[in-house]
Length: 360
Image (cartoon, rainbow, N blue to C red; front, side, top):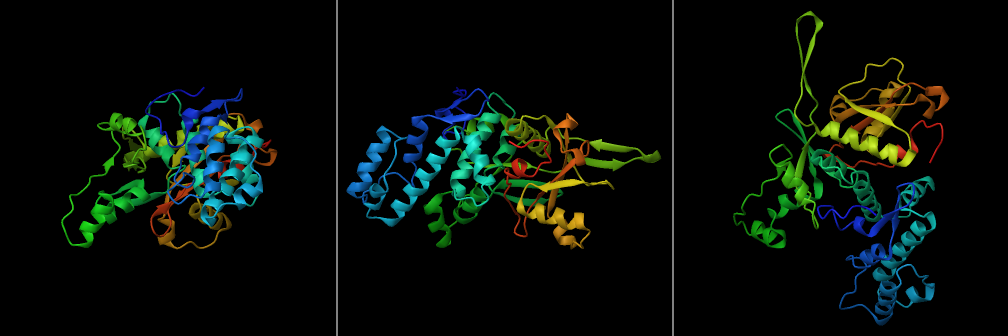
């Protein structure tokens, strides 16, 4: 069983999952019951008799087969559509045998039919599995980037990444929800809500904040280490006690090992000086397009290059785990924000696009 650490994110259902011999996550009935209590599927005052009957039946036996006529009887089209999506997702996971196998299968199929919200909740549970027993706040915060869209801002030379939904909500409401929105619309002064940058002084508080629903209100510093040239060709590297980029690299290492069963090392790189650059992949849509253009030698506008937050060098501990034509060569990963400063990592890219000697 996964640990029962009360500080883990609970909405993703990690505490209602078990592990198979491979260490992959297998849903219990309570996991599916948690899904049935989500706003998209929970009963409301307007729910019809057919919806209420199916909901009660599924709460009693969450894995039971559902006949098409049971959904066709729903009066509300949205409720019918939501339940169809859920049941399709549930059946795919049960057939695959684990969340990991289902998640990989969704993308191997080519056309992904699973809603992004469902995928993000799955990745959140997978992250809990990867970091179960780890008390490093930086790795946990970096792991949020695998399932939560980020808003990136460069401020006084620092690259800061915050949860976009939280930052947008604070911008609109001052952090006071609908009341705050009304106050701001009326011109009233709304108390400023502080967003904290994760640091040594608040790391313990961040770990506690994961309990319950978690606000995702800590900012991660993704600034590269500062290097200063000295005389005689020497370089002084000024390191910080903790690095968001290094933490993200550690999470990516865990992700690759967990899915592929191979050990890799991932290191942040400010730039690539490799005349024999053979393989790359973007961790997001923006960096994928950017790296492809750079690899082909296309002209890339300076403002677009500035969206690149970091590169990473991925190396395999055992070169025999790689395709023969690139064996021993590094794989370069890219991380970039779009023109609006938004970043959404696609962790599935590490499942589909690594030069592995064998696939999952």
